[in-house]
Image (cartoon, rainbow, N blue to C red; front, side):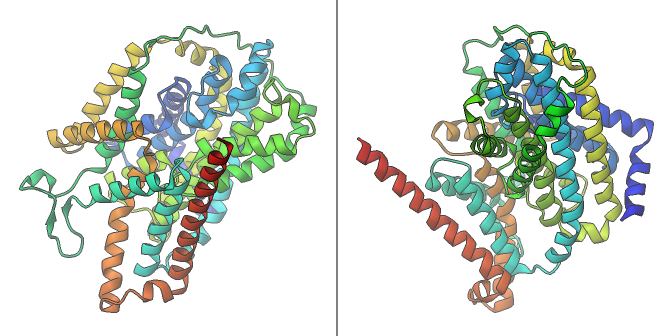
Length: 500
């Protein structure tokens, strides 16, 4: 283990790779701090750039964008009461009120420091859990992988939206889109309508960028005001703004929030947007002074920022060990693996351990870079919030179009980008969540391929999918989760009807 770590740090501690990490973290912070420009968008835009780089340098760039983007959201949350990313929603609850009391520096310093602690905690869990989990995952066969794909789609369908039915429908729609092109195993063309461009199906990167970036651009364009009326406030910080006594009082809160963030991050497709709300609620319920929450208490900032950054490590666990994205950004990173001709999963640890530990090393170095850059560059980042959106959105649109074209140098990928962008926009308007769509698109081929392989092994018998111990347990959990979620929705509707 240590020799692989030494190799990873030795590979990354060059002027070129240090520059790549600093650039990635800086750009990630910028995207995270500007409302509407998320870490997902930053990674999506830089995926084509990573294609021309060495795999290790490319992934150092992508994970640096990830860490910078998640942490950068706290700047807008504290200074403007606008969450820069969904992961920083709960940070606004106490960060902005504390800034309004003239303690913006304290709020920012607290958020920055505990973002760093949360990231290191998540990465530590990743380092110690991922390798043994990969050893278990090596034993997975077709039955187990099919069941895992179904469980993942079920979880994200039920947790990412208000309606279980719409969540499952969105996941099914994503799987339907993944069926375009040549079928796995027998290579029969499906839904191509005689268009040779569709034989290979829709490319992953244009689909991801379209769903997340283009639909977000369209939503942002709806706002009549594309400029920020709020003015950045003073961000003077002496140290990190809090005392050693205050830091000691947050030890248990930090540990609990980190555990929640990592645990939620491991659940496929949920991520820091949910983790920070859960951690904030847990902190408030266990506090001796719950009445102070929402008025500028440090506990709320610590809970939100420690949990959302800890979710990074959790999301990376299932990406690296099982090949399943834990959130929107890791879905983009899955595209990065595809671009570089690699497949995340248990075999990655046995076939390319040097590459895996280089990613671990990049996460640690990016965390340190994030702490330094946000602490010393906070005044610069705040001024970026005043850039009008009517400058930013057209630039982002152009970058999305150019980035999609450069993957295969064909216009079909540009049309794919626009198709997924418009589809994502209108589906969100109708109340359908986007995460199940993209996970259905990614996991659809995995589920179908392993279903067909399993049926070949069993000679058309579906029973082994249930009788196989691991597969049976996973499918059982998926069934119980659907039943429980449906029961909660029905109960909630009955209560609302009785109130009326």
